[in-house]
Image (cartoon, rainbow, N blue to C red):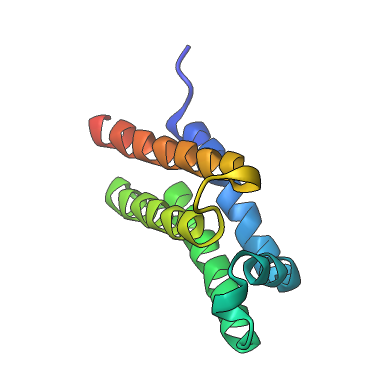
Length: 125
């Protein structure tokens, strides 16, 4: 029995949807994480960090909803945007992949693979 494409889309983007809502509901978690990831880059600019976290939350929510509810072409664009988002987040918070950042780095690489696989699935159906 084949799994419906909407179920595959949902399972692929649910993490982004939840993460985006959390960033919008309680940005302090995202702010603290970003400040820890890049202490030198953001130490003196809390407003910039707040803006980045807010925009990241909006990006995750909108892209996830586009994947779930729009036609194939818009869905593909949204998936590519999540690939870009994940690459940026990985480079910002989990690079280089040593010590405690190794597993989140590999997890994000796997997420990118899943997003690209979903793009290919949509293109071939």
